Image (cartoon, rainbow, N blue to C red; front, side, top):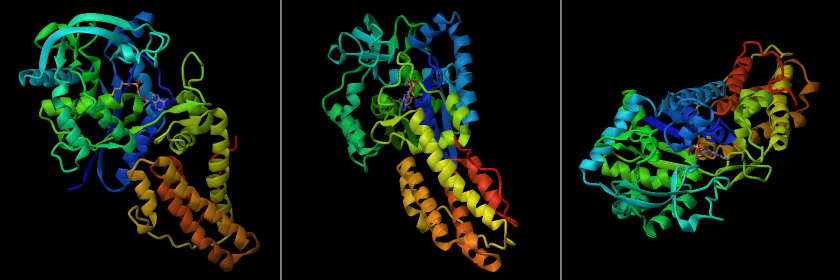
Length: 473
Ligand code: MSP
């Protein structure tokens, strides 16, 4: 039986149109999914949209649409842009899917019957932008630091609470001890430590229903309340498999996301699963953020970069490359139009594109009787590349490939093949042709269309020169 690999992205809020932040997570998750396919594994890759809650309802109202009409429109934007970017997802989940809604209700009912839900008065503050309860201590100038243009809401209502605090000791053990029966990995290490120290400081129970947010899934035993949007959203990772009759992919191998939603994915989700007696995901990987020319990306700064604009300028593989090469692994990563253009020209138009076209032009002058060896991704010589991709360091995996490109360039410069002909030229070109085939192979998860083009061009029998892969900008 083939090994299974189940990877997910966050499901994005439909109050926003897709931007480079969503694109970053989705593209790199796609690269990981494709890498696991290359390893011969059976992969299920999930993405989707998060469609309930106050924030979405407000955005719909502003557009004079019903929440459902609004969700249908925006969700489509996400589906379409991912297809354009060659994201090979297996399923696109929407939380307004009635099957998802039913599964969420079943899980909440089960937790209720287990005695982990009670009714109490919630008094405090709520940030609609975050869809999150917020404490006085977290406020900056009386507002949520992430949403400084919005008022926080004062709330005082009867809610249903989930006994999150009860699970804290179990969660600490599960994160710390790889042998624990609930063990799950939080990576990178810095994020694991952050979660542990917050857990050790103590965690209150969580309000999991809302009395005044009609755009949500009703609490099964009390239709006057709806389920808190985050609880509804997290369950997508599980419901998507049930909907597709792919339960055998559970537990997820990897939830891929960024630091803004670490707590929900590394604590709340696992507590819900333990309570519902469902096994826990194996790993939660948390990346950092893109900054745009040194600043936070925001509508008010008008510096939001959309995947559509990236596609228009750099093409599908240009965009995929630039994202993967600037991936904010453990620290925020600074990007922008200027940096992207420079990198595109240096690495793609010059580096890769130039090497391929130089070698193809030289080879086209020969009989092209090059031998082609079988390339295996698990080959020892690609060990570093494998290790980087196992840790989701897409930028380092690319650096490994670009080192090969630069070695090949040096080889050409020192062998002066342009002075050679016939047999002699073929002899000098043979290792280069093989090297380019290896490079194309390793590029498959990253820039699949380009990798295929190069493979075809160098598969022979006759190697021909072709249009530049990446026109200079
Ligand atoms: N709907 C919730 C997720 C529910 S998952 C069960 C949500 N949606 S979101 O639309 O706000 O997406 C947040 C995610 O978008 C981040 O975790 C990250 O994956 C991505 N990014 C948003 N801004 C980003 C950057 N500036 N840089 C990199 N990724 C960012 O939260």
